[in-house]
Image 1 (cartoon, helix red, strand yellow):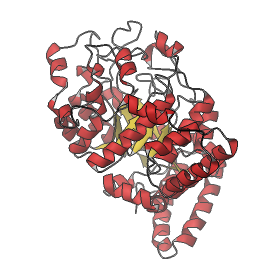
Image 2 (cartoon, helix red, strand yellow; image 1 turned 180 degrees about the horizontal axis):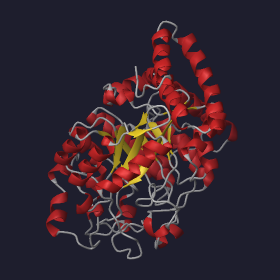
Image 3 (cartoon, helix red, strand yellow; image 1 turned 180 degrees about the vertical axis):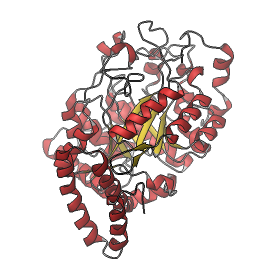
Image 4 (cartoon, helix red, strand yellow; image 1 turned 90 degrees about the horizontal axis):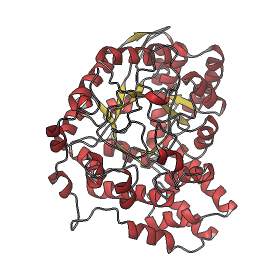
Length: 499
């Protein structure tokens, strides 16, 4: 589809933000992010001792959400022994809640038209160097055929810019198109079983439609929670300049009946200590007011973008050392949540992150519009939002994870069985979801190994699978016979089986 990128109907822009769907959540006219309060908590903490740290870690290990005061203490930790204990606790939490599974997905960018002018983004409206494009339904089908028939993905994150050409009608049509694709593989078929959506904030009315269209998780990242920095980077007069419309996007989603929501920050826009604290405030407020915390937390780190001085020269760039600590702190502060690291990071950073509590990552990633199905398309600054740090294939990542002793999960069963929202949160907090999902993770891993794995990856994958089977046999002797019957059916070519 083609459209002049500067063609934006004024009527569409005027109708986007519904003030009553902001005001209903405010308290005494204020939002729940109070910048001075966050900085006060960070600065009033003294030098933490090991005893303090251990007391806080006991809360995390019990899968209790930390208080802002607790997190402020952990932010200040520099002692190597205390940091080591924090890392050990983070890994224990991840294994308790999610077991040794790593979930993979692929991002699918639908278009790069946008009405906003974010200073750090290559897709911003006034960036005339960007090559603008929106995928047609036929092009979306071709992209999906590659993802499902050649690579083996079962879930995607569909990414949409804020523009009338990629509004709610387009989103719903594209989701329907993706779900319809079913591709033959070596022994069965491949298809997308869960579509998560990263899109602009929507009204409750639109979110109801999105829910009914087969949505998985709805993602909206605040980018930065710091009010002054937010205003500076999102010019006045643009839709994105309304801080509170974005801040309460997840509240509206939950009011619309969307169980699973994903929050996040673009680290590098402002001081990372403030942003980590604000993510915790967001999680606490969602749970207090809406009854459910975030299903996932993402923490992309700012990367170079086409024609963006701020992305190149931000005063708040995050070092690798601080980035590792960010991951650690989020796992400890919001212990039940899924944590997503993306291909913005290098292969080594993603390996490190697995040991800090990460549960999800993308693979075989291409973020140029139409790049999966168009031969020879590598990274091109003119057609993608930012540059990637890790472009390894899904097969390479599965191999890498298996060598580390992790199983790659392609499972989407829980979502289709109704284990979403509060139900899944209760299971996660109790440590039951990780054990339950192991069965379905093994089934999907066997399916992927049979249909897509290179010989070397299949070999190392089957070794990990045997260890998983033995663990299931020991931990669940009564349920093992039924589970094993399902596994044998998968080995014979049946697909999309789950318990």
